[in-house]
Image (cartoon, rainbow, N blue to C red; front, side, top):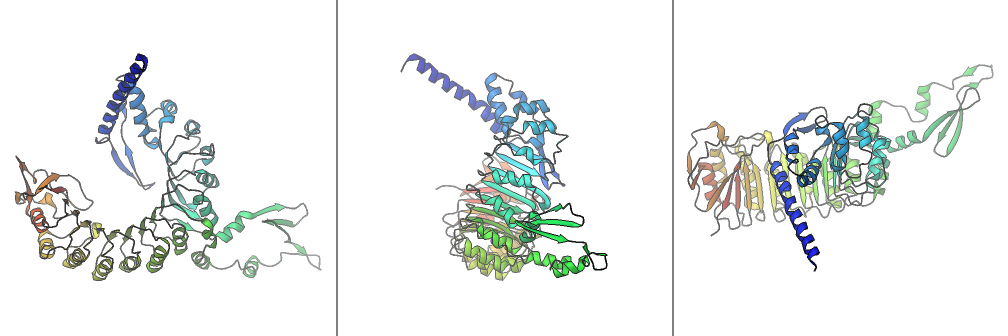
Length: 543
């Protein structure tokens, strides 16, 4: 190896060493409270707004920092956030560095320079489009795209033809989210049939199938006026029919050929809106079976108005599904949905149910496949029937999460059900519970009998006794076999302890009586290593 080669290698090492400094600073900056989150009610989206000027100044330290620091910083930006902060000429000059892009109702005339900058958008990896009133034709560009994640939000109408073409061309997508769209069977087939790399599919908020037959007829019908007076030519598909609307009578007059209402009744096109709506609900969507097999492993259905045919069309096309998140639907029976999941998803391992309806939740738990190992319930109630259904899968479940949100109760019946689950499901390795009972009731109901959890490794109990209301909460030393780590995290409906309520005096951290009582109750579990009680994390000491 010559001296020049050695010098070049040393130079490359020095460059790599210099590149570490801005990357470390970017990592530190990602944890700083730079974001001011506000809810955008119009788009149902939380927007993060922050000022990038302090971090941009750090890029002026030297040329190396400017080359690396600036590119990393721009890749973390969102165009919808910085559009009003960064001048358009600067944005146009650095658009090739942007990786995440969000578009909110961008008018073409107002943002014409912006659309000109976006024409070469092959570098974009994540794209989010809300209520697309802009000319989507601007986004078509070349046929080969590198988009990995795509989120689309509509206006409860059919997808625009240009937007449909754009989605159809995204063959490298790994994640697709659709919100407030109406689909025909042919639309649905065009959207997802050519996505060999698609792993996550999300359907949310007012997505539904419409009558594909009437829609196809409407798309294929074109009308052209003939030169002959009173003659109208209607072209339907490949058929050509000539209809004489104003036929002359024997008396020389002209008749209209009958009333419009009678014609509709004869052709089967009459009827009230309610009957037409019922016909759309009963549509079986036979064309949806021709989609083929999708590679989706994570499916999210967050729409409570999804029809059963929609569930059927999606679940039949996802035999490789490993994770399913589904919410209660007003128009789909829980037993039928559970049957579809059990018959078509033989590899399902994680199941998340979001429902406040006990019958629907019970049917889904009863009918879930025996391959499910991790079950998450976001529900407002838990009774003995649901506990029995969970216990029926005790040999398969390794992770269980019960989240009752803001609708939790402080009664003893729920704790009785949870205790029966903890004594029956012996294979659980992780258990998470959102508690609403007081410390006294919890200790009375849950700590009077041992938990039969020999394989439990992690325990997470949130919401025990709002700590901020009681400044004089009794504090005792943490048990000898446990080490305390304070995490100040706020739950949606539960307050956490104040800093003054958890004093650390030297090497002897203190904890409330409840924490100590719970730790002493579960100290004999052989594999337990981590316990989280609201904001305090306890780790078992080795030896």
